[in-house]
Image 1 (cartoon, helix red, strand yellow):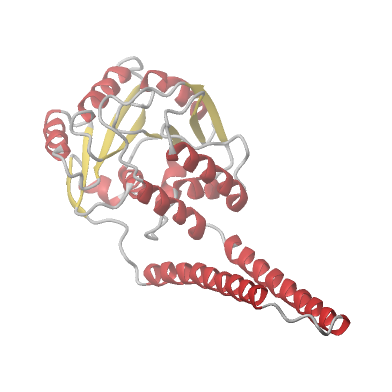
Image 2 (tube, rainbow, N blue to C red):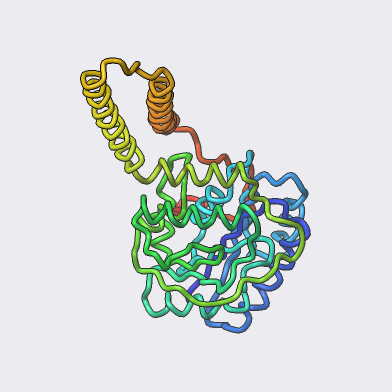
Length: 317
């Protein structure tokens, strides 16, 4: 009998996680040839979602709980869930009810056919304001830096083969970026058209600051192209400065009475200084992340686990 593992990162979902768990349990009764487990990861949520998870885990052995000692972020929580997932197929989904669980078997079908990964392709994404702009920017940057296919947009409802998840979970650095990890381990991705549902209650936990930090992970952790781009910009700036210097010299020789412009000189100085600081800042970002990585900062610390046996814990990699 094959097993499906559901991985759910939990944060501020005390009022919604119960509904998500109930829907998953009801959905699994449709296919008795599959067993299942639900790996919930409490990302040090400020509400009392851990109380709900503990109660549900005590009532149902299918529900496993991983409780973080400190908030580590959604992507880290998902990777932690992959560490503990034992299913043949692993499905990651949100804790707010937005993922169309009613289309679960459509998502699983490509994996049954042998594909590595299947992902929901939403006809319309429920995002507003800066998040829609941020998603578009992230998509374009991923295309440029990670060679992501043009029609591939990562969503919150994804099914992967077990070996894909285990390969992703081997990433131990403290700046994970699931899009980059996914594109590194496989190119066999099937998109399944479906409609994203509205959030059951509450609002998104992704603030502008968190979105920016996540974007920086992808920007610096999975590509050296920004450094190459900065080298190109530096060379281009130097070339423009050299050409401008020749123009100034020639103009002075042809028109001795023309004074050298103070304003244009200040513009050049400010522009070049700004570019130098920008490039140094980018290099510093890389160096800082390298420093934290070589010092082996932990991705997360597990405070406690429920319904996870020693055998599962020992074999999680």
